[in-house]
Image 1 (cartoon, rainbow, N blue to C red):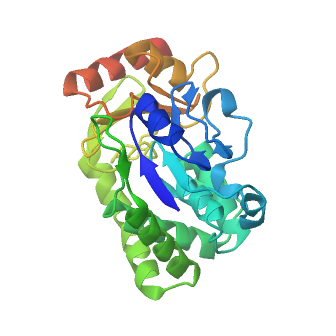
Image 2 (tube, rainbow, N blue to C red; image 1 turned 135 degrees about the vertical axis):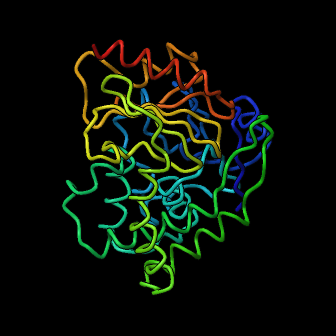
Length: 285
């Protein structure tokens, strides 16, 4: 089984069209979705009523016709869980994958509200710690890249984490402790009720300033990916992150009502960050 990734829906669709037995996992680009010939796992935008890909079981995927190629638009824990199920290699308690799905839908900042075990939370931080240094991203120019070996490595890491490998769990503990430092280093300023952040790491789960002040919105630039994400700590009546990013950057931007981002593969600027924060603040008021 091969795994390919692209920031371009058209290019991914073309590559899959010449293959027999294909599947896609979160191959979503705004409202558009690239479908597999055998299986399509997607749950954003118009497909938000679908279960998260990581909740699919090995047995469910195994009932389908043979799948030779899996296409992706991005790679995270939810995507990985879906890929593992398609390969028949998903391991670990279902409670862990339910936690992964919860965080994917509601955001990492809601983690404390999830009814989960301390063991699963520790495993989640272990994966996040590994992921920080092993990013799998689509080429920004839209080229289709094969990432089979990288996906296989992620399979092995998750398997070790599920066996409570102390090396990975300890790294997760260290990562968790570093969140406070990330809060300080990524903080740029407040614009009204909006926290502006800039970092090489994901920071849209940090709704408290370094001084402990709460803000309902984070507008953050990830300097590693070049993307800007807008997120709400809780739903805000009359406002949608997805609508905001599509208003700012067009239909290729997308996500959910409570978190959404700039078009995949595009590098945003400091001016984009500044403008987005200002306009979101204006909408809030």
